[in-house]
Length: 189
Image 1 (spheres, helix red, strand yellow):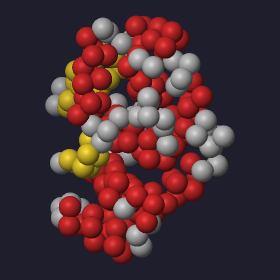
Image 2 (cartoon, one colour):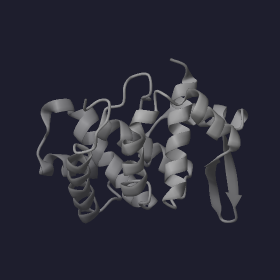
Image 3 (spheres, helix red, strand yellow):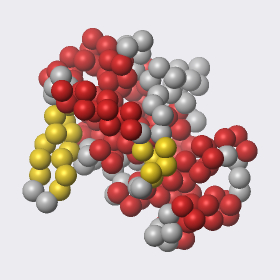
């Protein structure tokens, strides 16, 4: 499977995010794609590696994928005074979705869920949520540490986040995971 299938997934995600009035800047795209991967277990050919970085989960490869999509005009940054760019799928992005999107098409309910429930959060909420997801899944795998251990670890990693913010992010992660389990995806089949 080519990078074009992954690009089609990213274009679908950005389109769904825009439909929910998400800002669709790189931060929102990174955190939303990470949540999609964590909550829905995307197959390896669609997933990207993430690391914990300054503001939560981050993928250097996703940045590269976005640059490639800009290069061949599948995504276009819209510049805004006083803010960074937000991305919009172009007609080239829509053609990409149609031509290379079959692998991503079955994931549309999950994409819509993420666009609705995750991408509309503010940057600080996204940082807290993606860090909670990172600590819960990447650092601990299937061990499922208790709430207090996760909150302590997130506060160690992100001391600027308050305990209430981290607690709210943890509760939201549990709620999202429960709701995501009810959405039919190829991974659930």
